[in-house]
Length: 568
Image (cartoon, rainbow, N blue to C red; front, side, top):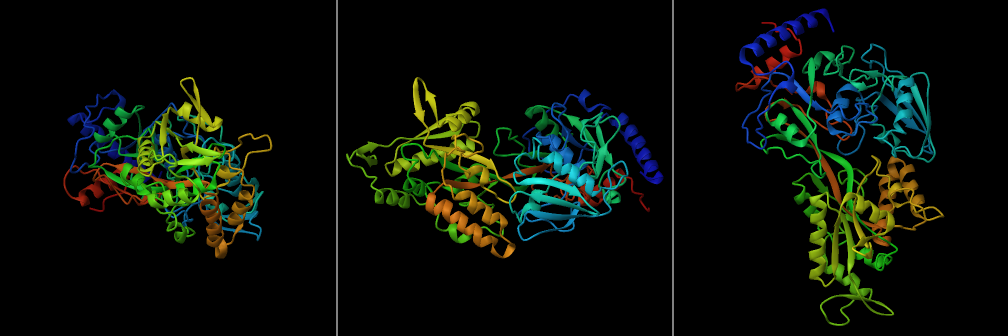
Protein backbone atom coordinates (compact mmCIF):
# COMPACT_ATOMS: atom_id res chain seq x y z
CA UNK A 1 0.00 0.00 0.00
CA UNK A 2 1.36 3.49 -0.83
CA UNK A 3 2.36 5.88 1.92
CA UNK A 4 -0.41 8.33 0.97
CA UNK A 5 -2.99 5.60 0.97
CA UNK A 6 -1.85 4.27 4.35
CA UNK A 7 -2.16 7.78 5.85
CA UNK A 8 -5.66 8.24 4.51
CA UNK A 9 -6.68 4.76 5.64
CA UNK A 10 -5.35 5.49 9.17
CA UNK A 11 -7.21 8.81 9.22
CA UNK A 12 -10.39 7.06 8.12
CA UNK A 13 -9.94 4.39 10.79
CA UNK A 14 -9.56 7.11 13.47
CA UNK A 15 -12.68 8.92 12.25
CA UNK A 16 -14.60 5.66 12.27
CA UNK A 17 -13.52 4.85 15.82
CA UNK A 18 -14.60 8.30 17.02
CA UNK A 19 -17.92 7.96 15.21
CA UNK A 20 -18.59 4.50 16.57
CA UNK A 21 -17.74 5.44 20.14
CA UNK A 22 -20.11 8.40 19.88
CA UNK A 23 -23.14 6.63 18.42
CA UNK A 24 -22.55 3.05 19.56
CA UNK A 25 -23.53 1.67 16.16
CA UNK A 26 -20.89 -1.06 16.00
CA UNK A 27 -18.70 -2.74 18.59
CA UNK A 28 -15.04 -3.49 17.91
CA UNK A 29 -15.94 -7.16 17.74
CA UNK A 30 -19.04 -7.85 15.64
CA UNK A 31 -19.56 -11.16 17.42
CA UNK A 32 -20.01 -9.29 20.72
CA UNK A 33 -23.13 -7.60 19.38
CA UNK A 34 -26.63 -8.88 20.05
CA UNK A 35 -28.39 -8.64 16.71
CA UNK A 36 -32.11 -7.96 16.75
CA UNK A 37 -33.45 -9.72 13.69
CA UNK A 38 -35.34 -7.79 11.04
CA UNK A 39 -35.26 -10.80 8.71
CA UNK A 40 -38.10 -10.70 6.21
CA UNK A 41 -38.95 -7.04 6.71
CA UNK A 42 -39.35 -4.84 3.64
CA UNK A 43 -36.78 -2.05 3.48
CA UNK A 44 -37.19 0.71 0.91
CA UNK A 45 -33.54 1.73 0.92
CA UNK A 46 -30.77 -0.02 2.79
CA UNK A 47 -27.25 1.34 2.36
CA UNK A 48 -24.37 -0.20 4.31
CA UNK A 49 -25.67 1.12 7.60
CA UNK A 50 -22.57 0.23 9.61
CA UNK A 51 -20.35 2.19 7.17
CA UNK A 52 -18.11 -0.81 6.38
CA UNK A 53 -18.34 -3.63 3.84
CA UNK A 54 -18.54 -7.16 5.26
CA UNK A 55 -19.10 -10.72 4.07
CA UNK A 56 -19.82 -13.86 6.01
CA UNK A 57 -17.24 -16.62 6.55
CA UNK A 58 -17.36 -20.07 8.08
CA UNK A 59 -14.34 -21.33 9.98
CA UNK A 60 -15.81 -24.84 10.07
CA UNK A 61 -14.99 -25.19 6.37
CA UNK A 62 -11.84 -24.65 4.34
CA UNK A 63 -10.98 -21.38 2.61
CA UNK A 64 -8.60 -23.18 0.27
CA UNK A 65 -10.07 -22.36 -3.19
CA UNK A 66 -9.74 -25.97 -4.37
CA UNK A 67 -11.53 -27.34 -1.33
CA UNK A 68 -14.06 -24.64 -0.38
CA UNK A 69 -17.58 -25.99 -0.78
CA UNK A 70 -19.26 -23.60 1.65
CA UNK A 71 -21.01 -20.71 -0.17
CA UNK A 72 -19.68 -18.04 2.18
CA UNK A 73 -16.08 -19.19 1.82
CA UNK A 74 -16.43 -19.49 -1.96
CA UNK A 75 -17.38 -15.82 -2.01
CA UNK A 76 -14.21 -14.99 -0.08
CA UNK A 77 -12.13 -17.08 -2.49
CA UNK A 78 -13.53 -15.05 -5.40
CA UNK A 79 -11.92 -11.98 -3.82
CA UNK A 80 -8.55 -13.57 -2.99
CA UNK A 81 -7.87 -15.57 -6.17
CA UNK A 82 -8.00 -14.81 -9.89
CA UNK A 83 -9.33 -17.36 -12.35
CA UNK A 84 -7.34 -18.65 -15.30
CA UNK A 85 -10.24 -17.63 -17.58
CA UNK A 86 -13.71 -16.17 -17.02
CA UNK A 87 -16.94 -17.37 -18.64
CA UNK A 88 -20.03 -15.35 -19.44
CA UNK A 89 -23.58 -16.57 -18.88
CA UNK A 90 -23.57 -18.23 -22.31
CA UNK A 91 -20.53 -20.28 -21.20
CA UNK A 92 -18.16 -18.58 -23.61
CA UNK A 93 -14.74 -17.32 -22.56
CA UNK A 94 -14.67 -13.59 -21.88
CA UNK A 95 -11.71 -12.11 -23.72
CA UNK A 96 -9.26 -9.76 -21.97
CA UNK A 97 -10.04 -11.18 -18.53
CA UNK A 98 -8.30 -13.80 -16.44
CA UNK A 99 -4.70 -14.92 -16.43
CA UNK A 100 -4.72 -16.89 -19.70
CA UNK A 101 -4.88 -14.38 -22.56
CA UNK A 102 -4.56 -16.63 -25.63
CA UNK A 103 -4.97 -20.33 -26.37
CA UNK A 104 -4.70 -22.75 -29.25
CA UNK A 105 -4.80 -26.48 -29.84
CA UNK A 106 -3.76 -28.85 -32.61
CA UNK A 107 -6.22 -30.48 -35.01
CA UNK A 108 -6.79 -33.40 -32.65
CA UNK A 109 -7.82 -31.13 -29.78
CA UNK A 110 -5.46 -33.06 -27.49
CA UNK A 111 -2.48 -30.69 -27.29
CA UNK A 112 -2.97 -27.16 -26.03
CA UNK A 113 -0.78 -24.08 -25.67
CA UNK A 114 -1.98 -21.49 -23.17
CA UNK A 115 -0.41 -18.03 -23.12
CA UNK A 116 -0.04 -16.39 -19.71
CA UNK A 117 -0.83 -12.68 -19.62
CA UNK A 118 2.00 -10.70 -17.98
CA UNK A 119 1.23 -8.13 -15.30
CA UNK A 120 -0.60 -10.31 -12.78
CA UNK A 121 0.98 -10.38 -9.33
CA UNK A 122 0.45 -12.38 -6.17
CA UNK A 123 -0.13 -10.55 -2.93
CA UNK A 124 3.53 -11.16 -1.98
CA UNK A 125 4.64 -9.13 -5.02
CA UNK A 126 5.83 -12.03 -7.19
CA UNK A 127 4.53 -12.23 -10.76
CA UNK A 128 2.17 -15.02 -11.82
CA UNK A 129 4.12 -17.44 -14.03
CA UNK A 130 3.34 -20.49 -16.18
CA UNK A 131 4.72 -22.61 -13.34
CA UNK A 132 2.03 -21.25 -11.01
CA UNK A 133 -0.72 -21.99 -13.54
CA UNK A 134 0.58 -25.51 -14.16
CA UNK A 135 0.87 -26.09 -10.40
CA UNK A 136 -2.72 -24.91 -9.88
CA UNK A 137 -4.03 -27.27 -12.56
CA UNK A 138 -2.28 -30.14 -10.85
CA UNK A 139 -4.11 -29.46 -7.60
CA UNK A 140 -7.45 -28.81 -9.31
CA UNK A 141 -7.70 -32.20 -11.00
CA UNK A 142 -7.69 -34.00 -7.63
CA UNK A 143 -9.56 -31.39 -5.60
CA UNK A 144 -12.88 -31.82 -3.83
CA UNK A 145 -14.39 -28.85 -5.62
CA UNK A 146 -13.25 -29.52 -9.20
CA UNK A 147 -12.85 -33.29 -9.23
CA UNK A 148 -14.37 -34.84 -12.36
CA UNK A 149 -13.85 -31.79 -14.54
CA UNK A 150 -10.57 -33.12 -15.94
CA UNK A 151 -11.34 -36.72 -16.85
CA UNK A 152 -9.29 -36.38 -20.05
CA UNK A 153 -6.44 -34.33 -18.52
CA UNK A 154 -3.05 -36.03 -18.70
CA UNK A 155 -0.65 -33.31 -17.62
CA UNK A 156 0.65 -29.76 -17.94
CA UNK A 157 4.15 -28.33 -18.17
CA UNK A 158 5.34 -24.69 -18.05
CA UNK A 159 7.26 -23.09 -20.90
CA UNK A 160 8.45 -19.58 -21.74
CA UNK A 161 5.33 -17.53 -21.10
CA UNK A 162 3.07 -20.49 -21.88
CA UNK A 163 1.67 -23.68 -20.40
CA UNK A 164 1.48 -26.86 -22.47
CA UNK A 165 -1.42 -29.20 -21.69
CA UNK A 166 -1.99 -32.75 -22.95
CA UNK A 167 -5.41 -34.42 -22.99
CA UNK A 168 -6.29 -38.08 -23.41
CA UNK A 169 -9.17 -37.32 -25.79
CA UNK A 170 -9.69 -34.41 -28.14
CA UNK A 171 -11.62 -31.51 -26.62
CA UNK A 172 -11.63 -28.23 -28.50
CA UNK A 173 -13.65 -26.67 -25.68
CA UNK A 174 -11.11 -27.51 -22.98
CA UNK A 175 -10.44 -23.81 -22.40
CA UNK A 176 -13.97 -23.49 -20.98
CA UNK A 177 -13.04 -25.82 -18.13
CA UNK A 178 -10.35 -23.43 -16.89
CA UNK A 179 -12.41 -20.96 -14.87
CA UNK A 180 -10.22 -22.16 -12.00
CA UNK A 181 -8.34 -20.22 -9.32
CA UNK A 182 -4.60 -19.73 -9.58
CA UNK A 183 -2.40 -20.09 -6.50
CA UNK A 184 1.30 -19.45 -6.05
CA UNK A 185 3.39 -22.56 -6.66
CA UNK A 186 4.38 -24.51 -3.55
CA UNK A 187 1.91 -22.69 -1.26
CA UNK A 188 -0.98 -25.16 -1.35
CA UNK A 189 -0.19 -26.36 2.15
CA UNK A 190 0.60 -22.96 3.66
CA UNK A 191 -1.16 -22.43 6.97
CA UNK A 192 -1.87 -18.87 8.00
CA UNK A 193 -4.19 -17.17 10.48
CA UNK A 194 -7.11 -17.78 8.08
CA UNK A 195 -6.36 -21.49 7.79
CA UNK A 196 -5.17 -23.37 4.72
CA UNK A 197 -5.10 -20.38 2.38
CA UNK A 198 -2.52 -20.47 -0.42
CA UNK A 199 -1.22 -17.17 -1.79
CA UNK A 200 -3.49 -15.65 -4.46
CA UNK A 201 -3.35 -12.85 -7.02
CA UNK A 202 -6.90 -11.58 -6.56
CA UNK A 203 -7.92 -8.05 -5.61
CA UNK A 204 -7.71 -8.82 -1.87
CA UNK A 205 -5.60 -10.81 0.55
CA UNK A 206 -5.97 -11.74 4.22
CA UNK A 207 -4.75 -9.40 6.92
CA UNK A 208 -2.36 -10.72 9.56
CA UNK A 209 -5.15 -11.68 11.94
CA UNK A 210 -7.17 -13.42 9.22
CA UNK A 211 -10.38 -11.63 10.19
CA UNK A 212 -10.49 -9.24 7.22
CA UNK A 213 -9.43 -8.89 3.61
CA UNK A 214 -7.27 -5.95 2.62
CA UNK A 215 -6.63 -4.58 -0.84
CA UNK A 216 -3.78 -6.33 -2.68
CA UNK A 217 -1.48 -3.45 -3.60
CA UNK A 218 0.00 -5.51 -6.45
CA UNK A 219 -3.36 -6.13 -8.11
CA UNK A 220 -3.54 -4.38 -11.53
CA UNK A 221 -6.80 -2.63 -10.65
CA UNK A 222 -5.72 -1.76 -7.09
CA UNK A 223 -6.52 1.94 -7.35
CA UNK A 224 -10.05 1.17 -8.61
CA UNK A 225 -11.09 -1.18 -5.83
CA UNK A 226 -14.24 0.12 -4.14
CA UNK A 227 -13.00 -0.48 -0.56
CA UNK A 228 -9.66 -0.99 1.16
CA UNK A 229 -10.98 -3.47 3.72
CA UNK A 230 -13.62 -6.19 3.65
CA UNK A 231 -14.50 -7.52 7.09
CA UNK A 232 -15.10 -11.24 7.65
CA UNK A 233 -17.93 -11.99 10.04
CA UNK A 234 -18.82 -15.43 11.37
CA UNK A 235 -22.41 -16.69 11.32
CA UNK A 236 -22.92 -20.41 10.90
CA UNK A 237 -26.65 -21.04 10.83
CA UNK A 238 -29.38 -19.84 8.50
CA UNK A 239 -31.24 -17.67 11.01
CA UNK A 240 -28.08 -15.87 12.09
CA UNK A 241 -26.96 -15.28 8.49
CA UNK A 242 -30.33 -13.90 7.43
CA UNK A 243 -30.55 -11.71 10.53
CA UNK A 244 -27.04 -10.29 10.01
CA UNK A 245 -27.74 -9.69 6.34
CA UNK A 246 -31.12 -8.01 6.82
CA UNK A 247 -29.70 -5.86 9.62
CA UNK A 248 -26.91 -4.62 7.34
CA UNK A 249 -23.91 -6.33 8.96
CA UNK A 250 -23.35 -8.69 6.03
CA UNK A 251 -23.53 -6.89 2.68
CA UNK A 252 -23.53 -9.65 0.04
CA UNK A 253 -24.38 -13.37 0.00
CA UNK A 254 -24.63 -16.28 -2.46
CA UNK A 255 -27.85 -18.27 -2.48
CA UNK A 256 -28.90 -21.50 -4.20
CA UNK A 257 -32.72 -21.28 -4.48
CA UNK A 258 -33.12 -24.96 -5.42
CA UNK A 259 -31.11 -26.37 -2.53
CA UNK A 260 -32.23 -27.36 0.95
CA UNK A 261 -29.75 -24.66 2.03
CA UNK A 262 -31.91 -22.00 0.33
CA UNK A 263 -32.16 -18.99 2.63
CA UNK A 264 -35.33 -16.89 2.71
CA UNK A 265 -34.34 -13.27 2.15
CA UNK A 266 -36.77 -10.35 2.03
CA UNK A 267 -38.12 -9.49 -1.41
CA UNK A 268 -36.95 -5.89 -0.97
CA UNK A 269 -33.34 -6.95 -1.48
CA UNK A 270 -31.62 -6.91 -4.88
CA UNK A 271 -31.25 -10.31 -6.56
CA UNK A 272 -28.72 -10.90 -9.35
CA UNK A 273 -29.01 -14.32 -10.99
CA UNK A 274 -26.41 -16.15 -13.06
CA UNK A 275 -26.51 -19.30 -15.17
CA UNK A 276 -25.16 -22.64 -13.92
CA UNK A 277 -24.56 -26.07 -15.41
CA UNK A 278 -26.73 -27.70 -12.71
CA UNK A 279 -29.15 -29.72 -14.81
CA UNK A 280 -32.45 -31.16 -13.53
CA UNK A 281 -33.51 -34.30 -15.36
CA UNK A 282 -35.56 -37.48 -15.10
CA UNK A 283 -33.95 -40.82 -15.97
CA UNK A 284 -35.13 -44.41 -16.14
CA UNK A 285 -34.01 -47.70 -14.72
CA UNK A 286 -33.47 -49.50 -18.00
CA UNK A 287 -33.63 -52.83 -16.20
CA UNK A 288 -37.15 -52.24 -14.84
CA UNK A 289 -40.50 -53.45 -16.18
CA UNK A 290 -41.18 -50.46 -18.46
CA UNK A 291 -37.88 -48.56 -18.28
CA UNK A 292 -36.30 -51.11 -20.58
CA UNK A 293 -38.57 -50.10 -23.50
CA UNK A 294 -37.49 -47.19 -25.68
CA UNK A 295 -41.09 -46.40 -26.64
CA UNK A 296 -41.89 -45.69 -23.00
CA UNK A 297 -38.83 -43.49 -22.57
CA UNK A 298 -39.62 -41.62 -25.77
CA UNK A 299 -43.20 -41.00 -24.62
CA UNK A 300 -41.90 -39.51 -21.37
CA UNK A 301 -40.02 -36.81 -23.34
CA UNK A 302 -43.43 -35.08 -23.65
CA UNK A 303 -44.67 -35.81 -20.12
CA UNK A 304 -43.08 -33.02 -18.07
CA UNK A 305 -44.14 -29.40 -17.84
CA UNK A 306 -40.69 -27.83 -17.85
CA UNK A 307 -42.05 -24.33 -17.27
CA UNK A 308 -43.33 -25.56 -13.90
CA UNK A 309 -39.72 -25.87 -12.67
CA UNK A 310 -39.20 -22.16 -13.38
CA UNK A 311 -42.41 -21.38 -11.52
CA UNK A 312 -41.50 -23.51 -8.50
CA UNK A 313 -38.06 -21.88 -8.27
CA UNK A 314 -39.56 -18.39 -8.64
CA UNK A 315 -37.71 -17.67 -11.87
CA UNK A 316 -34.37 -19.03 -10.65
CA UNK A 317 -34.23 -21.66 -13.37
CA UNK A 318 -34.54 -21.89 -17.12
CA UNK A 319 -36.53 -24.61 -18.86
CA UNK A 320 -34.67 -26.75 -21.40
CA UNK A 321 -35.44 -29.95 -23.29
CA UNK A 322 -31.80 -30.64 -24.16
CA UNK A 323 -28.70 -31.10 -21.97
CA UNK A 324 -27.12 -27.71 -22.66
CA UNK A 325 -27.88 -24.28 -21.24
CA UNK A 326 -30.36 -22.89 -23.77
CA UNK A 327 -28.54 -19.60 -24.46
CA UNK A 328 -25.40 -21.43 -25.63
CA UNK A 329 -24.44 -21.04 -29.28
CA UNK A 330 -24.66 -24.77 -30.05
CA UNK A 331 -28.09 -25.29 -28.47
CA UNK A 332 -30.31 -27.00 -31.11
CA UNK A 333 -33.56 -25.06 -30.94
CA UNK A 334 -35.06 -27.09 -33.78
CA UNK A 335 -34.89 -30.24 -31.65
CA UNK A 336 -36.50 -28.56 -28.66
CA UNK A 337 -39.65 -27.92 -30.69
CA UNK A 338 -40.02 -31.69 -31.13
CA UNK A 339 -39.87 -32.38 -27.37
CA UNK A 340 -42.66 -30.15 -26.15
CA UNK A 341 -44.96 -30.87 -23.19
CA UNK A 342 -47.93 -32.71 -24.70
CA UNK A 343 -49.98 -35.27 -22.74
CA UNK A 344 -51.90 -36.30 -25.85
CA UNK A 345 -48.59 -37.15 -27.54
CA UNK A 346 -47.62 -39.25 -24.50
CA UNK A 347 -50.81 -41.28 -24.74
CA UNK A 348 -50.59 -41.70 -28.52
CA UNK A 349 -47.02 -43.02 -28.36
CA UNK A 350 -47.99 -45.52 -25.67
CA UNK A 351 -51.11 -46.68 -27.53
CA UNK A 352 -49.10 -47.12 -30.75
CA UNK A 353 -46.81 -49.46 -28.78
CA UNK A 354 -49.70 -51.58 -27.54
CA UNK A 355 -50.31 -49.93 -24.17
CA UNK A 356 -54.10 -49.85 -23.71
CA UNK A 357 -56.87 -50.12 -21.16
CA UNK A 358 -57.46 -53.79 -21.88
CA UNK A 359 -59.76 -54.47 -18.90
CA UNK A 360 -61.63 -51.15 -19.21
CA UNK A 361 -60.89 -50.10 -15.63
CA UNK A 362 -59.65 -46.64 -16.61
CA UNK A 363 -55.99 -47.66 -16.24
CA UNK A 364 -53.52 -48.45 -19.01
CA UNK A 365 -51.90 -51.89 -19.19
CA UNK A 366 -49.06 -53.19 -21.34
CA UNK A 367 -48.78 -56.58 -23.01
CA UNK A 368 -46.20 -59.05 -21.77
CA UNK A 369 -47.76 -62.37 -22.67
CA UNK A 370 -50.97 -61.00 -21.16
CA UNK A 371 -52.08 -57.52 -20.08
CA UNK A 372 -49.97 -56.27 -17.14
CA UNK A 373 -51.02 -53.58 -14.69
CA UNK A 374 -48.76 -50.51 -14.66
CA UNK A 375 -47.64 -48.81 -11.46
CA UNK A 376 -44.51 -46.73 -12.09
CA UNK A 377 -42.29 -46.16 -9.06
CA UNK A 378 -40.82 -42.66 -9.31
CA UNK A 379 -38.05 -41.85 -6.82
CA UNK A 380 -37.25 -38.27 -5.77
CA UNK A 381 -35.17 -36.77 -2.96
CA UNK A 382 -37.44 -35.24 -0.32
CA UNK A 383 -34.90 -32.47 0.47
CA UNK A 384 -36.06 -30.39 -2.51
CA UNK A 385 -39.63 -29.08 -2.55
CA UNK A 386 -39.23 -28.08 -6.21
CA UNK A 387 -38.21 -31.58 -7.30
CA UNK A 388 -41.03 -33.12 -5.30
CA UNK A 389 -43.41 -30.61 -6.88
CA UNK A 390 -42.37 -31.66 -10.40
CA UNK A 391 -42.83 -35.34 -9.47
CA UNK A 392 -46.31 -34.74 -8.05
CA UNK A 393 -47.39 -32.75 -11.11
CA UNK A 394 -46.16 -35.61 -13.30
CA UNK A 395 -48.13 -38.07 -11.16
CA UNK A 396 -51.31 -36.01 -11.65
CA UNK A 397 -50.73 -35.61 -15.38
CA UNK A 398 -50.20 -39.33 -15.89
CA UNK A 399 -53.33 -40.13 -13.88
CA UNK A 400 -55.29 -37.93 -16.30
CA UNK A 401 -54.35 -40.25 -19.19
CA UNK A 402 -54.76 -43.49 -17.21
CA UNK A 403 -51.14 -44.17 -16.27
CA UNK A 404 -50.59 -44.92 -12.57
CA UNK A 405 -47.47 -43.41 -10.96
CA UNK A 406 -46.41 -43.76 -7.31
CA UNK A 407 -44.02 -41.03 -6.14
CA UNK A 408 -41.55 -42.05 -3.42
CA UNK A 409 -40.06 -39.04 -1.61
CA UNK A 410 -36.97 -40.44 0.11
CA UNK A 411 -34.32 -39.05 2.42
CA UNK A 412 -31.00 -38.28 0.76
CA UNK A 413 -29.38 -41.50 2.03
CA UNK A 414 -32.35 -43.66 0.98
CA UNK A 415 -32.55 -41.85 -2.37
CA UNK A 416 -28.88 -42.51 -3.19
CA UNK A 417 -29.21 -46.13 -2.10
CA UNK A 418 -32.21 -46.56 -4.43
CA UNK A 419 -30.23 -45.13 -7.36
CA UNK A 420 -27.24 -47.36 -6.67
CA UNK A 421 -29.25 -50.52 -6.07
CA UNK A 422 -32.04 -49.93 -8.59
CA UNK A 423 -34.66 -50.24 -5.90
CA UNK A 424 -35.49 -49.82 -2.22
CA UNK A 425 -37.47 -51.33 0.62
CA UNK A 426 -40.95 -50.09 1.48
CA UNK A 427 -41.71 -51.85 4.74
CA UNK A 428 -40.84 -55.50 4.10
CA UNK A 429 -41.38 -55.26 0.36
CA UNK A 430 -38.57 -54.67 -2.14
CA UNK A 431 -39.64 -52.05 -4.70
CA UNK A 432 -38.02 -51.74 -8.12
CA UNK A 433 -37.29 -48.17 -9.17
CA UNK A 434 -38.64 -47.30 -12.64
CA UNK A 435 -37.71 -43.61 -12.79
CA UNK A 436 -35.84 -41.06 -10.72
CA UNK A 437 -35.51 -37.30 -10.56
CA UNK A 438 -31.84 -36.35 -10.76
CA UNK A 439 -29.62 -33.32 -10.66
CA UNK A 440 -26.11 -33.23 -12.08
CA UNK A 441 -23.49 -30.52 -12.42
CA UNK A 442 -22.30 -30.84 -16.00
CA UNK A 443 -18.91 -29.63 -17.13
CA UNK A 444 -18.75 -26.22 -18.79
CA UNK A 445 -18.48 -27.92 -22.20
CA UNK A 446 -21.66 -29.94 -21.48
CA UNK A 447 -19.86 -33.25 -21.69
CA UNK A 448 -22.34 -36.06 -20.92
CA UNK A 449 -19.83 -38.88 -20.47
CA UNK A 450 -20.26 -39.21 -16.72
CA UNK A 451 -24.04 -39.42 -17.08
CA UNK A 452 -24.26 -41.89 -19.97
CA UNK A 453 -21.09 -43.99 -20.17
CA UNK A 454 -22.08 -47.67 -19.78
CA UNK A 455 -20.93 -49.65 -16.76
CA UNK A 456 -17.79 -51.76 -16.97
CA UNK A 457 -17.70 -55.47 -17.79
CA UNK A 458 -18.49 -56.39 -14.17
CA UNK A 459 -21.60 -54.15 -14.24
CA UNK A 460 -19.98 -51.87 -11.67
CA UNK A 461 -21.09 -48.25 -11.39
CA UNK A 462 -18.09 -45.99 -12.04
CA UNK A 463 -19.95 -42.75 -12.75
CA UNK A 464 -23.47 -41.28 -12.50
CA UNK A 465 -25.13 -43.65 -14.97
CA UNK A 466 -27.79 -44.82 -12.51
CA UNK A 467 -30.09 -45.66 -15.43
CA UNK A 468 -27.89 -48.66 -16.28
CA UNK A 469 -27.92 -47.57 -19.92
CA UNK A 470 -25.99 -49.89 -22.23
CA UNK A 471 -25.64 -47.68 -25.31
CA UNK A 472 -22.15 -48.65 -26.45
CA UNK A 473 -22.09 -45.97 -29.16
CA UNK A 474 -22.66 -43.04 -26.82
CA UNK A 475 -19.07 -42.37 -25.77
CA UNK A 476 -17.92 -42.21 -29.39
CA UNK A 477 -20.73 -39.77 -30.20
CA UNK A 478 -19.85 -37.54 -27.24
CA UNK A 479 -16.17 -37.52 -28.19
CA UNK A 480 -17.02 -36.47 -31.75
CA UNK A 481 -18.90 -33.49 -30.34
CA UNK A 482 -16.06 -32.53 -27.97
CA UNK A 483 -13.41 -32.76 -30.71
CA UNK A 484 -15.45 -30.83 -33.28
CA UNK A 485 -14.09 -27.45 -34.43
CA UNK A 486 -16.26 -24.34 -34.17
CA UNK A 487 -17.63 -24.74 -37.71
CA UNK A 488 -19.17 -28.20 -37.13
CA UNK A 489 -19.73 -28.24 -33.35
CA UNK A 490 -23.40 -27.27 -33.46
CA UNK A 491 -24.14 -29.98 -36.02
CA UNK A 492 -22.33 -32.64 -33.98
CA UNK A 493 -24.25 -31.63 -30.89
CA UNK A 494 -27.52 -31.77 -32.81
CA UNK A 495 -26.73 -35.33 -33.91
CA UNK A 496 -25.78 -36.31 -30.36
CA UNK A 497 -29.00 -34.93 -28.87
CA UNK A 498 -31.15 -36.42 -31.63
CA UNK A 499 -29.70 -39.83 -30.79
CA UNK A 500 -30.18 -39.38 -27.03
CA UNK A 501 -33.67 -37.88 -27.01
CA UNK A 502 -35.39 -39.07 -30.19
CA UNK A 503 -33.81 -42.50 -30.72
CA UNK A 504 -33.14 -43.80 -27.21
CA UNK A 505 -35.04 -41.43 -24.92
CA UNK A 506 -32.18 -41.92 -22.47
CA UNK A 507 -33.36 -39.22 -20.06
CA UNK A 508 -35.68 -36.23 -19.95
CA UNK A 509 -34.14 -32.80 -19.42
CA UNK A 510 -36.27 -30.50 -17.25
CA UNK A 511 -34.06 -27.40 -17.06
CA UNK A 512 -31.07 -25.66 -15.51
CA UNK A 513 -30.76 -23.83 -12.22
CA UNK A 514 -29.75 -20.25 -11.74
CA UNK A 515 -28.05 -19.10 -8.57
CA UNK A 516 -28.14 -15.73 -6.88
CA UNK A 517 -25.95 -12.95 -5.59
CA UNK A 518 -28.05 -10.97 -3.12
CA UNK A 519 -27.30 -7.48 -1.86
CA UNK A 520 -29.36 -5.14 0.25
CA UNK A 521 -31.17 -2.54 -1.80
CA UNK A 522 -29.07 0.54 -2.48
CA UNK A 523 -25.72 -0.86 -1.27
CA UNK A 524 -23.95 -2.12 -4.43
CA UNK A 525 -23.98 -1.18 -8.11
CA UNK A 526 -22.20 -2.70 -11.11
CA UNK A 527 -22.80 -6.33 -10.15
CA UNK A 528 -22.19 -8.73 -13.06
CA UNK A 529 -21.92 -12.31 -11.71
CA UNK A 530 -21.04 -15.41 -13.71
CA UNK A 531 -20.66 -19.12 -13.07
CA UNK A 532 -17.30 -19.61 -11.41
CA UNK A 533 -16.96 -16.00 -10.26
CA UNK A 534 -20.05 -14.44 -8.68
CA UNK A 535 -17.97 -11.34 -7.88
CA UNK A 536 -16.68 -10.91 -11.43
CA UNK A 537 -15.53 -7.34 -12.06
CA UNK A 538 -15.54 -6.39 -8.36
CA UNK A 539 -13.21 -3.47 -9.12
CA UNK A 540 -16.08 -1.92 -11.09
CA UNK A 541 -18.53 -2.12 -8.21
CA UNK A 542 -19.79 1.00 -6.52
CA UNK A 543 -20.45 0.52 -2.81
CA UNK A 544 -22.67 3.10 -1.14
CA UNK A 545 -22.23 3.94 2.52
CA UNK A 546 -24.30 7.09 2.82
CA UNK A 547 -27.42 6.69 4.97
CA UNK A 548 -29.05 9.73 3.34
CA UNK A 549 -30.74 9.97 -0.03
CA UNK A 550 -28.53 10.56 -3.05
CA UNK A 551 -26.07 8.24 -4.75
CA UNK A 552 -23.42 10.94 -5.15
CA UNK A 553 -22.93 11.25 -1.40
CA UNK A 554 -22.77 7.47 -1.13
CA UNK A 555 -20.16 7.22 -3.85
CA UNK A 556 -18.08 9.87 -2.14
CA UNK A 557 -18.14 7.99 1.14
CA UNK A 558 -17.09 4.83 -0.65
CA UNK A 559 -14.15 6.66 -2.23
CA UNK A 560 -13.01 7.86 1.19
CA UNK A 561 -13.21 4.32 2.48
CA UNK A 562 -10.88 3.09 -0.24
CA UNK A 563 -8.36 5.80 0.55
CA UNK A 564 -8.69 8.09 -2.43
CA UNK A 565 -8.03 11.75 -1.77
CA UNK A 566 -10.91 14.19 -2.25
CA UNK A 567 -9.62 17.11 -4.33
CA UNK A 568 -11.90 19.53 -2.48
